[in-house]
Amino acid sequence: MTALLRAEARKTLTTRSAVLIAGVAAAYPALALLPALFSPEPPDVDAASLLQLLRGVADVLAIAALLLGILAMAGEFRHSTIVPTLLATPRRARLVTAKLGFQALFAVAMAALAMVVAVVAGGAYLSNNGVSFDGAAGDVLLTAGAVVLVTVLYAAIGAALAAVVPNQTAVVGGALLWVFVVENALPVVLRDPGLDRWMPSGAAERLLAAADSSAAAGDAWAGLAVLVAITAVLAVAAVVVMKSTDIS
Image (tube, rainbow, N blue to C red; front, top):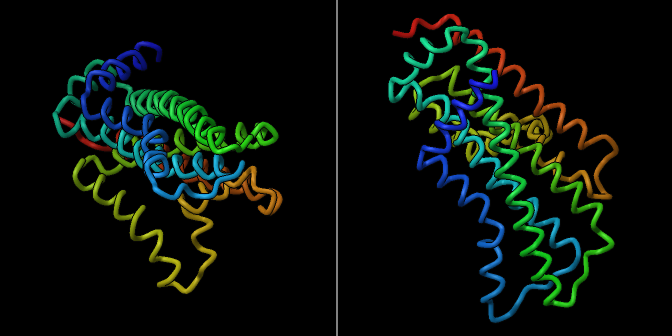
């Protein structure tokens, strides 16, 4: 498995699109502060503003991780490298596990770097505006941890999705359509406003609100459980499809 993870690391780190996506996502917290820095009327901020920044960054990190996971798996099929990959690693379940595992590790690094950038840049901005978030340090750490978890799970979801639907264009388009359209429209169409709580973005929001005092007890754990369940189902489906697909 270690050799497989090293191989996945080489593939990802030598893919320009993957490095670009990860780099932009990691730098996004600093970029997100630019409008406030150059605004003629700086917005009102308080200690909770840093938590809002972290949660906002989570949205970008989740999409970036989803795309990175998809590209890592679907790219093998698009560029026909899946054949030599399977010749080197004929046990397909191990290959899927390695793909999901490395994308999760890569997501941890990307999200952790983004959180450091967010805390440093956001903290400096708040300090310059006379706001201290020392008393909210625990909430900041809790929210940052939630952001990392969401990013990791979305990375695994992306890789698993691409194994189930190995057409890169179709899976990227379908995933983005789901995130930006279906998840918002489905509760409206079905007239069930609470449905979004059980979909990926709604579950992520519940997890990210772990430090929110107004959140219901256990809500964050429920959100985490939903995301883990979705990831597990897709991972099993990915293994089943990979084992049953004739690749030549």
